[in-house]
Image (tube, rainbow, N blue to C red; front, top):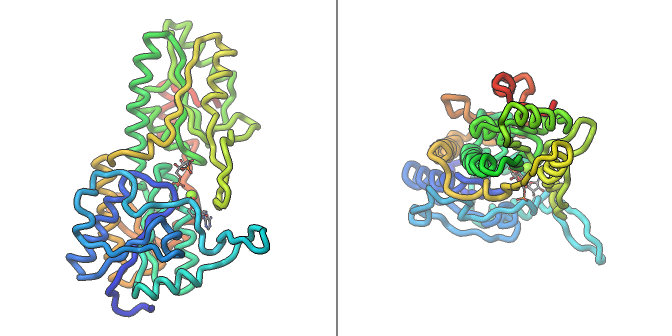
Length: 365
Ligand SMILES: Nc1ncnc2c1ncn2[C@@H]1O[C@H](COP(=O)(O)OP(=O)(O)O)[C@@H](O)[C@H]1O
Ligand SMILES: O=P(O)(O)OC[C@H]1O[C@](O)(COP(=O)(O)O)[C@@H](O)[C@@H]1O
Ligand SMILES: [Mg+2]
C-alpha cells in the first residue's frame, strides 16, 4: 500500500444512513470504472465489514437502479470503531485498538485507497486511519446537516421535505380540531431540520437545541394566537431541544456506540406542558426514522453524485486525508482534521432565525 498508482478502490458507508448514500456509491463506481478503469470493492456495514472481511466487488451492474433508493446497498452501523473495539477478556468487556486488522484486510484485497462516506464519527475514524498510513478520502453525509466544513450534506434536503410534508398534514387536522400539534424531528445538537421545516411548513413555535426554551413563553405564544382567533397551533421541536437551565431528553443508550446517547421524548414533554399550561387539547407526533428513509430529493441526488465523482477525482489526484465538500457553487475539499473539528450549529443571530422571528415564530426564548 502506498501513494503509488491506484488500481483498486475500497468504499464503505458508516454511521446513521441517509437518503443519497446509494447515489454516492453509484457515482463512485461509475467514475472509477468508466473514467479510470479501476476495480471497486464495497465493504459491508461500515468498519464492521473492514474488520470482518465482508466485502464484495462492485461493477456498474451492481449500481443499476440504486440512484433513487434510500439507505445504502452496502449496509451501515453506528458501532465497530476499529480504534475502540469491544472485546471480551476474562468475561469482561474491554475496548481495544484493532486497527491493524483494517490495514491487513485492505492489503488482502489489494486496495490502494479507501473512500469513507460518513458523518463526524466515521470521518474521525477515517482521519485516524489516514494518520496510520491508509490513503483515505472522505465524503460527508448526515440528515442533521451539522458538519461545518461543507455548506450542506446530502440527506438533509430529503429529511427537510419529509418533515415539511408532515407539518402540512398536521396543519389540516390541527385546524379542524382546534388543537395544538407538536412535531418532534431529528437533530441532536443542531436544529437545522426543525428550523427549516418549521419555516417551510408555517410553524408557530420552533424549539431548537441552540436556543433553550421557556415553556411559559411557548404557552404565551399559543394563547396569544388563540385569543386572536387562531384556535390551533403548530409546534416543531428538534429532539435536542432543551429548556432554559435544563437538559435534553434522553430516550435510550446504545451500548458500544462512541456517542451512546439517543435523544427523544422532548415532544411528549412539551406537549404535556402545553396542555397543562394552556388547557388546549394537544397531540404529539414523533417523526423518527421516517425522515431518514425514502427516496432522495433531486437536490440530494445531484449533490451526492457530485460528491461521489469528486471523491474519486481526489483519489486520482493523490489528495488523501481530505474530504469533499460543497463551497457553493463549487465542490472542493478540506483536510479531514478540519472536517471533523467543529459542528455546524444554527447561529442564533442568523438570517434564518431573524426572518423566523420577524414573521412571528416563537423560539420560546
Ligand atoms: N468523535 C469520534 N471519534 C472517533 N470515533 C467516533 C467519534 N464519534 C463516533 N465515532 C465512531 O464512529 C462510528 C460512526 O459514528 P456515528 O456517530 O454513529 O456516525 P457518523 O459517521 O454519522 O457520525 C462509530 O463506530 C462510533 O463509535
Ligand atoms: O438511528 P439511531 O441510532 O436511532 O440514531 C438517531 C440519530 O441519528 C441521526 O438520525 C443522524 O445522525 P448521524 O448523521 O450522526 O448518524 C440523528 O438525527 C439522530 O439523533
Ligand atoms: Mg456522529
